Image (cartoon, rainbow, N blue to C red; front, side, top):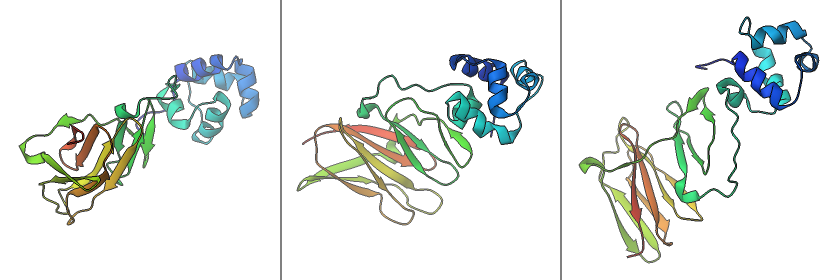
Length: 197
């Protein structure tokens, strides 16, 4: 973990729960002096208390460690504005339709920022029957490859996982206009709007 819980975070989250230091201390089976030390930065909670502390303060462990409570005020977020995350350790692909604190393999992941493709990462697509067939002319070696492609419309988000030494090609059922994403393991995320031809 890059960071550890701060006293300010504990105090802020405790106060949001309308709890005194004594009440928090009682729930954790520690002294109120211990809670006071945490909140003033003169000490830290033991690692064994992090999970119970997050439960009592009604936040996730990553939220507790970052000191930011994520509240999704837009429960019907626009899927076309989806955020994508890729774990640099295991390659896990994660997707969020709203603000999120996402971690994988012990690393907090930032959302990827999609760019317009350069010459080496251009995607072509054609319609075949009722499908978009998308191809990227890109090396697919074990060291350098396109990891996935995703097609996002207003109501659906589809991901096709690609593998080294395979084809940089994916098929998506033809729907209305959307955004195509593809991810190079060396150069990051690219995007392009596509629609019906």
